[in-house]
Image (cartoon, rainbow, N blue to C red; front, side):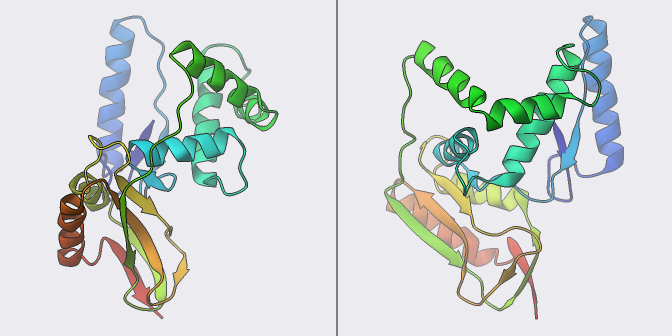
Length: 213
């Protein structure tokens, strides 16, 4: 899974090509059949950045909640479908449909529960003690989201050490926003870490960049 974009870990097609070649060559040297799947890394996939917030996204997709992040669902289906084809369980071009079927009819959720039970039981992801929204400063359209600085913001809030800490995104590129509307919510376990994150957000106001209308 290799997302690429201006603020992703892989920033260019050339870098992605070189990294993919190296990964595939290493796999071949061990007799492993591997596949690199490029993706859109211009913005986070799903809403959560941080252990508990990401887990909630995963659970929402598995449980087929109406408000589950659809970009995460689509990426999960693409990756699972590719794996099914790579393993010879699905024909070429058929893996995505097979993965979507397992998700839609509840088999994926049932299997996930069995995996959790085998590892000590299902647990509810914890909730953060402190939260603060970052608001849009003007009406406009979201034109970019800085992945690296969003990750930094989540770390300052306490993630991943504090499992409930992180960032919950409320917008995606192309969304229309109004002044004062929430772009994201900072989740923290301690007021000090919330203050660190808020201070960073103040000095980096274009983490979510808005083109005014």
